[in-house]
Length: 135
Image (cartoon, rainbow, N blue to C red; front, side):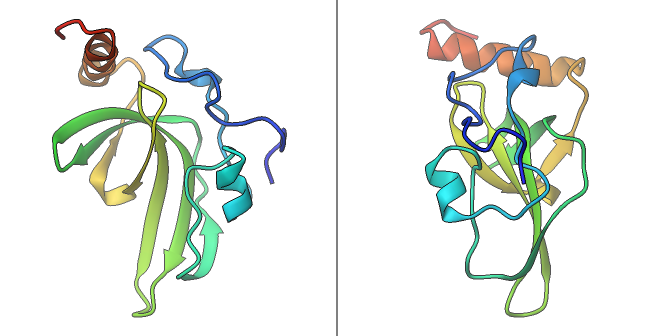
């Protein structure tokens, strides 16, 4: 379970390249719908089997390769789940710089350090777009 069960992961909104570490990870358990509704977790999967947390350091900066290209995010939740076909999906709960939540497969992200220049540029650009600035 998480340490502060009553505190939401991302109640304060977004983050920048300096304050992303304040995001609280959801670790040590598989998230439930109640965890998602309380904003302690990003996702809860109920149509899979053998859900288990992935042992990784969280929060973790990532570059997410989504449909719209690369995007900066911070992984705050990591779980492995088996599908009906017996395949294992490694799923991450992400927080984007604007404070939004997203779900991605581990294979669709690059784990990076917060000093990674591409990650830093993507975070800064996302914040600039949010403020109406060109980035």
